Image 1 (spheres, rainbow, N blue to C red):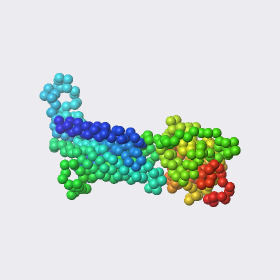
Image 2 (cartoon, helix red, strand yellow; image 1 turned 180 degrees about the vertical axis):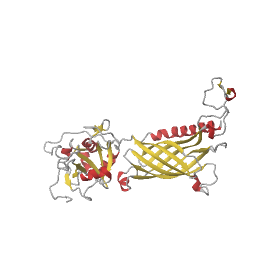
Image 3 (cartoon, rainbow, N blue to C red; image 1 turned 30 degrees about the vertical axis):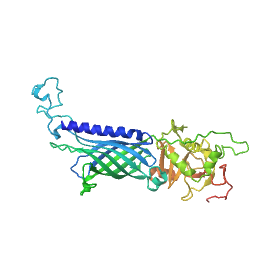
Image 4 (tube, helix red, strand yellow; image 1 turned 30 degrees about the horizontal axis):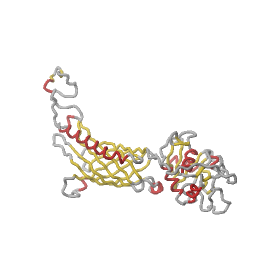
Length: 403
């Protein structure tokens, strides 16, 4: 009977927290997590659970629930109303065979422990790809929340409490949309007289999990309408063309490259599609690059070959590349380019790749994939204009060249 009360309490707590967080969690990109958690003491049970979170910039809301299930034999005896009618010939009155033993002990699983939490999460590095790159893909965070925790030892009273908690952790991207996380939580009952228990280490709860990111595709707030270029201007097949005067001013903004990188990050995990140029159908390599720059007001050619002729050529050596530069790769390491990516800094690139199942990050020279791209990098172009090059056309050789 007690296990049923605990079960209903756990379900009610998780449901109430989920309903409270739902309006907040619908406002941004989401994270689904499968995790395992345990208190500091090795005698406490291991819990398995799931969580849903949503972020708006660096701030997020997360609701979590976890259970530890035990067999009926591990809990206090729970005698069935059918037990009196069971004998060695079988059970009468329609009692399901196998759900109760002849001694009346329940064989159904019961809840040995549970936890539920609603957390406010602060992750300052999460919305800034450049900072994540500096930390090698790690994103630290802190959180505070309210919830509940309960343990029911065998043949003992339930110990459920409403709690408050604080903690910190770190998340690491594996494939852009797939990641891992680890955190430590200090949990304290509301009824406690002290803010932190003297043996506060015993109140720590550790958690590790596998995360899947979804949704939250970024959209530019401005609708840019393409207008025909004047006859005297450079054709857009040979040079990147701002769509209008407002777009030209954005290109001259030194923060334009950062916006390009941030916008591209919002599409990590989008599927690969040959010839694709839309997040609804998927992207190929040039389709992704053209979409990202186009949504920010800069029109690029539709093919890898065309992109390899725009802007200004820059050296591919370390220190010469800047975020927003286009990097070109060749399968046979020749002048014929086959692939294009956007450089984001610290040797990292973002691109849509068939071998990577869509839009993702790779690090030049790191791992088997990164080494392949480093070995097959053949050229780089800077298409984001510096001051004084409003039309984005190539500058004369030697004028502001990095070489």
